[in-house]
Length: 284
Image (cartoon, rainbow, N blue to C red):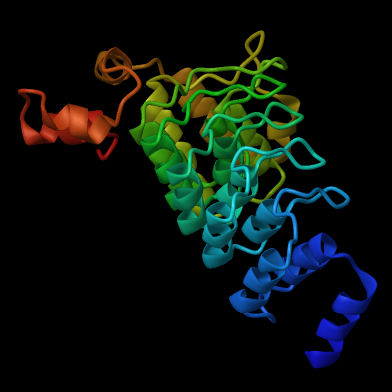
């Protein structure tokens, strides 16, 4: 460790050392970071594509994130990829996300592809980060450059936990991107590649309950890729052929009428029997 530290000290400026020390945060203590800042390292200096705060979030070091913010790091600054620190934290660590939000991070910041931190938390299936972002003002139906929502990002990976949290916060399941793809069709694309497990099947069932009516057909036919898996093809054909029941369609309509809010809390306030509340919350 001594040799590595000496190499960093001899080759790079103070601000460059700060970046490299944070990148090696698992090896170097917080005191090294604080010492460099005390000697004049710029906490907002961009080196290559990275800033110190972004780097600290990439390695999910909450103590370092808080230290940098205390020392004046700009919480919504962009790195070389037009990403904020929250974009990186959302993929990694709930504590980093909460610290950034406490210091004023924008939960709806857009990167160069119009992706929000919520998109990335959902894609990486960091459900606790998804929850923290939504509880602090993240837009549950935010659109990226392809008009995909965080629910679509979660569904394309079969991320059951993140899909569940997004639906709890009122995510719209009947939404299509610029290519006509819905969250369900994105999940089916995963299943037809033979990558589905029991968890992905549970995700499909949850999305089916949420939408009230399953539809994948175009001009009366399922996507040609589905035919490669006879068992899956039969299952999807049955789901698409069955009309949505009045009960299921009513559930979708009631959930929509409650708006973009935390549905478990909203549903509990309704004057309904417990069994109907569970039905509205997609538990049965």
